[in-house]
Amino acid sequence: MEHVRLRGEKVVLDTSLFVNPEVRGDFGGTPTEALEGFLFLAAQIPTVEFYMPSSTFKELLNFIEPDKVSGDLLTILHQKPPSKHELFCPAVLLYELIEDIRERINKGLRIAEKAVRSAHKSEKDIIQDLRRQYREALRDGIIDSKEDVDLILLAKELNALLVTADYGIIKWAEKFGIRWLLPNKFKDYILSSIKRYKIETADVKG
Amino acid sequence: MEHVRLRGEKVVLDTSLFVNPEVRGDFGGTPTEALEGFLFLAAQIPTVEFYMPSSTFKELLNFIEPDKVSGDLLTILHQKPPSKHELFCPAVLLYELIEDIRERINKGLRIAEKAVRSAHKSEKDIIQDLRRQYREALRDGIIDSKEDVDLILLAKELNALLVTADYGIIKWAEKFGIRWLLPNKFKDYILSSIKRYKIETADVKG
Image 1 (cartoon, each protein chain N blue to C red):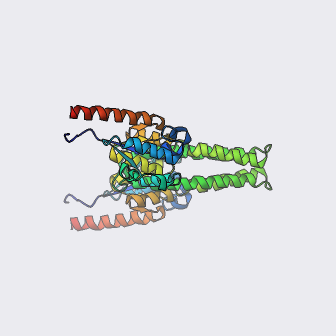
Image 2 (image 1 turned 120 degrees about the vertical axis):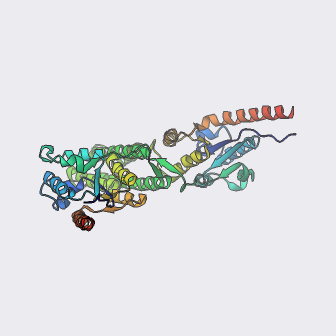
Image 3 (image 1 turned 90 degrees about the vertical axis):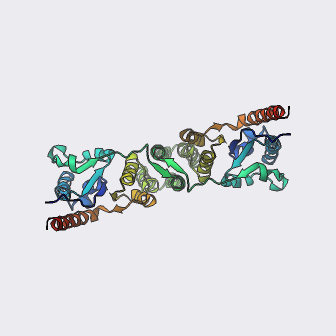
């Protein structure tokens, strides 16, 4: 068999693929099983490199039983922090971030004021509603942690496909010109990659 | 007299210099007088170029009476927006911004919860305290408007000295390696520049 040189594709994975019950089902019933299921399939496509930022991987460890996961994890899912001191962000994105946050902060205050004024409800209900509405207003659809920034910068650095269900991360992937995929399409992506790899290696052998 | 070539220094000005009652006193009693006072002194140092981002200048116009300001304004205080599509921000600063905002958002929620629970006070007092504390937690010491970003990027682009009293802007000037000066030192800076200019031109003439 000749040495096979196929197009190398890089993919950066978020934890939601294994942790979120709505999407991990494609690969396994529990986070550990989903990770194993992914590794089993990923091992069949040596042309695709899978990455996860170290910070995201650390989060993942909280959900899986490391003893039950095969050593393939270390060679198939590469842990790599972004080269954060070498990367730059277009300044114009700074404006968008600051304006977005400014609007959210104002909205947060209006929510808080409304909560103070809603005297007809029980304190417990008021606090519960406040928390939900406040978090929705200030956190949803925004990158709000260093893990989020890691995912975006690593995908940018590697020119990789970013697999995530986080709307805030997707919005920034769009700004940075990063290709992205929702986790519920990821099994199809893997199976298609396996099929293409088999066809291409068969061509080379033939 | 020979053609004089002195070191050109660039200075970016915030509005606080003319608007903030605590600092504008160095130049005049009202914002309009302070601006006139500045222009009178600035006209004596052709070696220093003064800039203000267009967005900041627009804010300044809300405080001054344009009819009463000399046309020197147009040739001495240059209005220039930063070249925001050509500038980049080190990605590592994105982490600091996101982490800072994350902590502030959490603090904002705690303040809102406390307000809901402070039933012993009148609603009016509660709302008043809430607004003050919330703004302190979420806005103080942070760049929170596109005018703030304009000041930082323009100073960076021009490699200029940034004159501002805003602590959030100063914090970012430090991150970007921008020289900064508090407005209450600015008159001394101007007077010293005038003195040095006179000495240097006298040397050239002599």
